[in-house]
Amino acid sequence: MTLCPCQVSPTPNSLSQAIAYSDCCQPYHKGLKKAETAERLMRTRYSAFVKVLPEYIVTTTLPAQQSLLDVAAIEDWAKQTPWAGLEIIQHTPKLGK
Image (cartoon, rainbow, N blue to C red; front, side, top):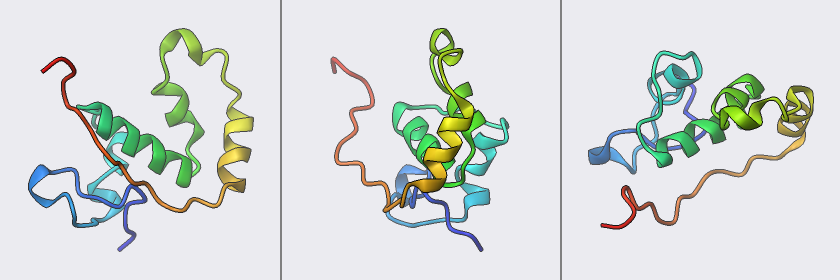
């Protein structure tokens, strides 16, 4: 089993348990799911960088900015970066509440 790079389960009741990539971020990367929250989007994008999936980074960027992105540069940068892990300090699901 390959653990998901985002290192956490997507369900609120098991947030401290790492799970398989195939059960976590991979469905988002394959376009089978869309990120429901900003936190989930950040986790899927982090995993996409680790897995070197620049197309996912582009498609999850604001449409008006997508044409400004250099897919080859994103890919090179992702390959050269020593990914140490993702730690989310705080997430506020809805601002203003």
